[in-house]
Image (cartoon, rainbow, N blue to C red):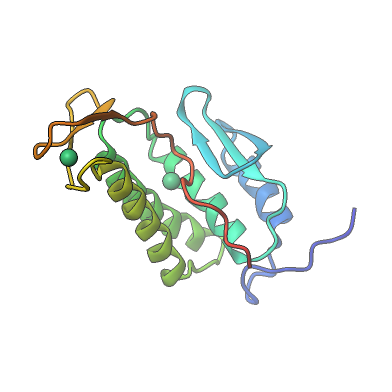
Length: 167
Ligand SMILES: [Zn+2]
Ligand SMILES: [Zn+2]
């Protein structure tokens, strides 16, 4: 297998593969598995990561999922709770990154959080009249207080709900 020479930080020389190796050792409670998107799966304590982690953002995403895992993030009901868990996971990822001599890119973190907020906003917009609405207590529906339309939202997970950047 070709050595991946992309490094997260010139100071550490860590490649995605070598960081993954260290994380597997340092977080033996988690299972690591490749998948279509970076994701934390609380039910089976699984860190799902994309095979291709070229570039810094792959590493950051991996650390972010470890952040969810080490904070033991589980179920949540309402979309806004997810956003606050996302913020917490990034803060934790920053701490973990420091243990490996990696510094997260603050702009990248902000972009990720913004895309969660955009996603939240899109789910909350009434399809009939575009009024911003509130999620019901069960989390399964939104209801428009203007035109009384209700709509179902798919359950959300600790996966990045936005497409990967083309870059
Ligand atoms: Zn997350
Ligand atoms: Zn409406």
